[in-house]
Length: 260
Image (cartoon, rainbow, N blue to C red; front, top):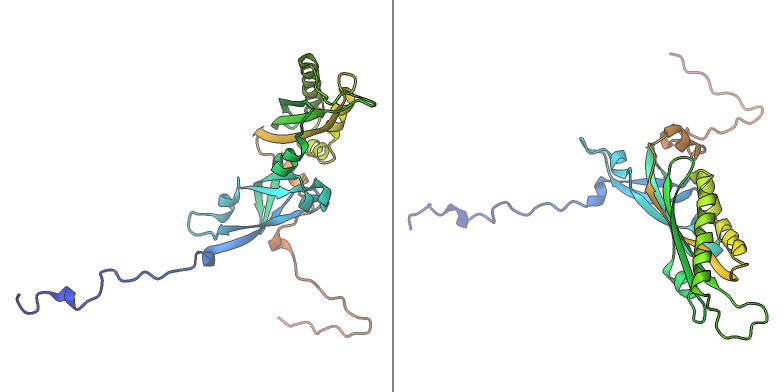
């Protein structure tokens, strides 16, 4: 081997070791704001990569879906079996403004409802609200024992199941198609529709545990900024928030004005 030809022997590996950078140094925290339908507007926080070049942070956030427990949104532990889905529609400063995007039950709640010796009745229907949202509602209910019933089981006949299912579909269509999305969400929280179904089906077969167990948003109308901002009236942009000004005590001299 000729002297001085193999120069790579004295050097390290080609390229060297890459410097490891913590990815969280490029991230920013944003506050997730729920619509005014709910008691607690602060739904949580979310991370996003800071704006760099053509990658804009607000554009990355739009369309992001958050799943929040209704107990946290309503400050009511009795509502802990419902999960609410919120979708980001607009970004104001450091606030992520969301709208209702669906609802579901927790698995443990559904499992606790299903028992032996009763009939489970389910129904689903697609409805359109007055403001153009197309939703799919899923209802479920269970037959219950009549007063002074001696028989062990409470099974409904297939004709009764069909009649109850028809009532469910009619009531869900009527209740959802005559209101906008905001008012419909207000009906879901206290289970107004479930009680209506229970009352209407009492003559066919007594029911118990009637719920709207799931809601899916199938189609949304064209984004209306004015209508959407009505849901977030009290949410001011973080950048517009001014510093707190202390009130001047009586008799205290005012600071001298600075000359230009």
